[in-house]
Length: 594
View (cartoon, helix red, strand yellow):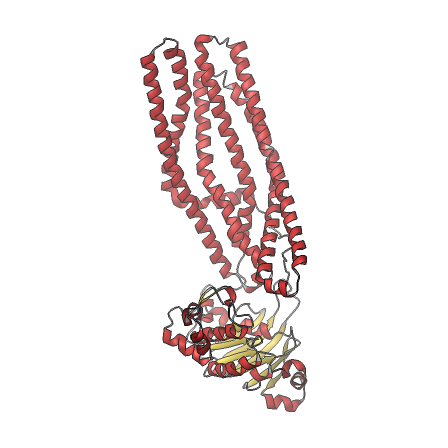
């Protein structure tokens, strides 16, 4: 299976930018009413803004020239009233748009998380959790600015630009040329930035993802870092990761900084042309200085939206790579999903059958982990799977859990091909425990109810007593309401494992799978939990993957897995008499440890 580490840049599938933007902005279609209201308020803002220079022109050319104090006061009052209208309209639509953009970001993040939960185990096996986290947090946050700016910047600036051009043309078409000269300069700047900046920002996103993954991985494994006294080594690696992040960011920002000089140059050229046309061509005199003043204001109002639109496009180029990374995850088809007409799995009785099962990872189809595996397990049987590391023991139980699909053959439960039943109805009847049974931050009771939210206190306590967890839980200050940190901090490894056993028992599974579930339990704890396991195994089909003899010797049957299949099958006594593969394993240190 191809693995992407914390130091490897992620491959990003090439995408058409127009399609990415169309897909991104389609999320705004659910807010048509809000956007219409916002647009109307923006039009009010634009109309008010465009009217200011005309008021100034009127005041200078008429009221001031004629020394009409009364008229001056009237137009000043009108200007103040328009300012209040402008402020109120702006405040309302900006607040509305903030709500819309926050809602859209919430929906995108929620949909992304829901989709990630549907992806197969192979997706999570092939990349660090921190890189997935970077897409759910940082990349989604980057979209907020784009979505918000689409309404708060794009629409108002376009409307302002159109309004200013219309007003300028009405007042003086010739002077309007002074504004038009800015357009080609800006267009050239935009094209240069798009060509150079896009790849730079993609690289930055990859380096940002690497850094997040590195920090996440090392924080999660801090106990290992400290126990191996590896702080200096990780500091050096962190310095390298952050340096790559810094260089990538600076490279992207430097390209996008080209926008500002282009805009300022265009403003200078426009101002020069304005005054040249006014003085040399139109021969503007004192009596018409209002027109010159108005046009100076309009030129500023023209360059302002152009500058802001350039900044918006800059922001779009900056963040489109975030949208690409999000939609790339959204477009990944789950390797394991419900069939089109999948049925609900009935109450499991516990018969399990493998029919000609073969399996290979999708990215290594020629490397079969399992080859033509066949067996049938009766309801209530306990099956132990033993064999060397990498033989395929965990693969077999993963296929029963349908974490992967068979490459060939069928896995049957109670006569039903599990490929034709819903994943949810199957897994809710399976109890799956591994050597790393993750406990979530929260109370012990909340963890015990994780697989069965409607479990009663009586069910929780009964399960805890069955695996001998009740006594130590009650010795804690708040008993079952004791808060735990992530991964069960504050509890011993054995205590965390006992809570995980109780959590599985609360679920009352039809089939129990223990994959190295007792490997982290000390000998004394194992003696206690062994009786709990026996309680869990009663009246349910169970598969046990273990290296400890004490957890498998009482199994109804033992399957020796190696070379892609089942070499031997039988109970402990039968296999010992054969003096074959199981006998050799039993004689080895791995199996004799207890």
